[in-house]
Length: 454
Image (cartoon, rainbow, N blue to C red; front, top):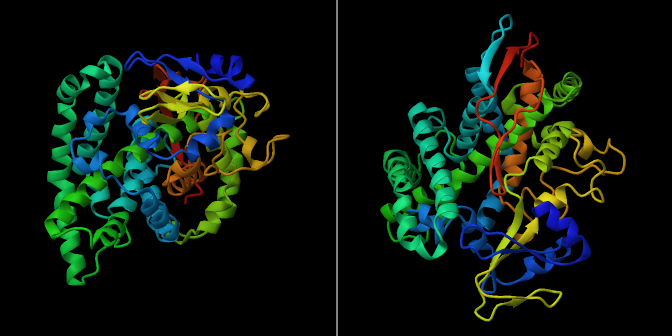
């Protein structure tokens, strides 16, 4: 429906109404040329924050800081960019170690593994090596607790959004969110709060900690003067860390799983893996903790494959969702008046399948964005624009996309370089509800460590 409306109305410069099962009041999907105008609107007129809460009900957020004072995007963006090289050394090491643990290092026998489940472990360990450092990122019980929290967050959020009318959510939404609250408390009380207390205590005593350049350390340093005492600071930090966990774990696991499924189900999967392997062997020399940002930027084919898979496999069909919060409503650039409370956004589904933007958009062309595919220019995964929306657009674009893109690119390069993987006869279908989609979680693949080891 979103693609149909895009080609019928948006391509003519017109907005259209799309069903919204949350409150039965349609969303308004606007032409992509309205994106810059949307991005320029103040938060008190057109709220990006409300748009973010649309996808996961605010009633799943049990800690006030999770929805009232979440991680500042500028702090995250600045910290990630400034410290990327330090993060690379830690994350690259964790990716290699985690893959060895879940896929093994047997060069003789093939091993059958669950693709989604093993990719979740690698993503969770790599991301938390950056967020929290060792040893917590390798703690199996912590990872299990984290996963139950993240999964309940997504499941209950979707249930509330699709089953409970907005007018009833203040009551029923809170009731349906109780599993999230319970698992949040287990995660925070059992792991994140003790971790935050210990880290703050050690930092103030001047002691050096293992992996002290973790994201948590930067947050603690940035928040040092904002709180009256250490306990308040620890509580706030634990809440921020819990909020930071959800997006990269789910979206990154979806991305790398979909990418591998697209490669393995392609008739040219052997050639694709060989090209990725050759590129990785040329770019990544020495031990993983010595790979630099410049080395990772040379992985242009790996970057392109992930970008192309993300274009075809959207987590949601809508993008850049905003809610009109101005009491008097808001007029679109074409003069259309949108009342207070209405959500407006772009059709990512239509844009990503537009033949005026992408040649043969229905085809998986792995090296489309490496400058090897006709008219398409070489473009990086982190690049954002109105023609490519997985990381959002404009000033509210995903602040962690530089880290996520680097992590995914290295994961794919390490997999291609270090493992043989048998192809699939056809592309397994994923799961969808409304305009949301996710990769299948039950696909088994056969892997074997290459004789030329990492």
